[in-house]
Length: 79
Image (cartoon, rainbow, N blue to C red):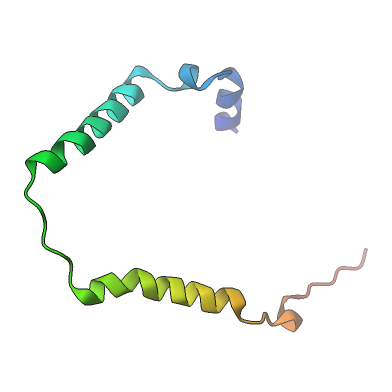
């Protein structure tokens, strides 16, 4: 409830976003530009670690295209 009231006072994003947030974003952006130039290159990850996102995507695809058990999901209310 308090968050909703606070968002009503913010007409633009600049009013809700303080100077500390801007400084934090600037530091993060600068570190993303500078640190890759300073740090040594990393070795490639193990092959099994590369298949981890592929496994997650395969599981999500199987869940997305598997038929739903409609009889267990039906809720009937009488008014």
